[in-house]
Image 1 (cartoon, chains in turn purple, brown):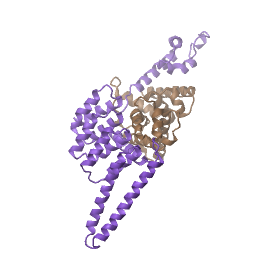
Image 2 (tube, chains in turn red, cyan):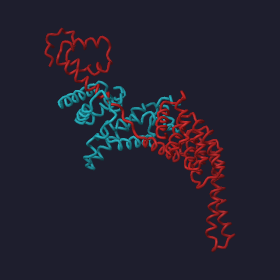
Image 3 (spheres, chains in turn blue, orange):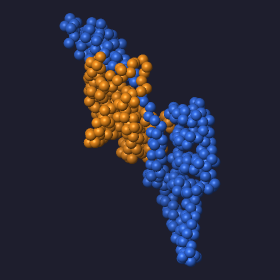
Image 4 (cartoon, chains in turn purple, yellow):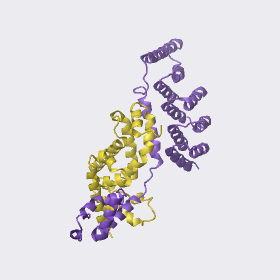
Amino acid sequence: MCLFQTELKTTDMKCEELEEKIIDYLDNKLDKEENLEIEKHLETCERCLDEFRDLQEVMELISSKEEVEPDDSLRINFYHMLHSEIKKSKGSRTAETTSPWFNRTIFRIAAGFALLICGTIIGIMIQSGVRNSHQAQLEQLRSEVTTLKKTAMFTMLKEESSSNRLQALNYADELDAPDQNVIEVLVKTLNTDKNVNVRMAAAYALAKYADQQQVCDSLVKSLSLQSDPILQITLINILVERREKSAVKPIQKILTDENTMEEVKHIAENGIKMLI
Amino acid sequence: MQNNPDEMIMENVREGNLSEMSILFERYQRKLYNFFFRMGINREASRDLTQNLFYRMIRYRHTYKTGSCVKSWIYQIARNLHNDYRSKEKKAGDLFVSSGIYPSDIAQTDDSYPEEDFEKLETALMTLSDAQRELIVLSRYLGLKYEEISPIIKQSVPAIKVAIYRAIRQLRCVYFKQN
């Protein structure tokens, strides 16, 4: 207990009162008057002064500890997870309401495709002798399905509803080897679609074919076209993951742009470090 | 969009604009990683827990109530994940993991303090209860205000103040006893 407590006048602060306020005092959260009161008490009470000095040292030590930095895998994993959740969620609940009319047309299109596939199978069966052309049948079927998926993709990408456009990009994901047309449509979607989710899905669909120089170039080029932070982050992640050196320039441009969001700058900076 | 408050972003996410979750991710991932790490969980597990937290936010986005504070919600999930992790650890009887910060993890400290001081502080922190440590981490390391901590741990501001004072006092005792 404070030795001088009994000698102090009643208006003076007591040791228990100091206990209540000492942390706020150290955090500089008190007003002038309260600060003075505490300083006055510390001048007269040695025990409190001792404790005050110790607490000050411990608190300074705590706050001098810097934040630790998570490694890049956290961000990369998060964006992969987010991408697959977006894919799973499409159609079920979206911000835009789809009118019954749209749903009906989609069903009609789907039913049409189903009929076509059945027709094709029957056609192939009748056409070819059952025995010799098993392989050919499969080949033909496969190419039919691919054509259907492509047609569906092109049609659905033009739709008003963003969930339908997302579905279209799912078809793109399922194609084994996309041709020139598909790539072009995907690039166009990535650069011009008005919905961020759709643009992001297009970026990931293209990322699968980034081994092709042309695709990789268009991803790099898109980087300087995107002003949305989400797309900037997505593209930087994809390109850094692929160690794509030609991305350094556009990333640097994003870094020096004063309109760039702080977090994106941080990611851009890390990205450049990994690339050079 | 990047300057929108957390609450507006979370509402958009709930309504199906999942990509906006990336804004919340960029705002909070570092703090959350540090929360787990300062609670004494190793780097790798801290990363997995942070990842898991955002997964839960997406999965349970429909449970977010309009107008409620996103920051508190996020830290409530973080606490739950931390508790789950600890109880799993207890079940597994994995003493090695529970020994807290590994020597190789102690890095990135201010040069003005000698390394031994931080080690002593770390030892002192380990003597605190989980609840006390949590308060120190939230208020001192992550810089949350008492008013922000209050809904997270469901205690009043004055009660938090007293608890923090006691925790820091205990730290002081253990810390200076080691001298």
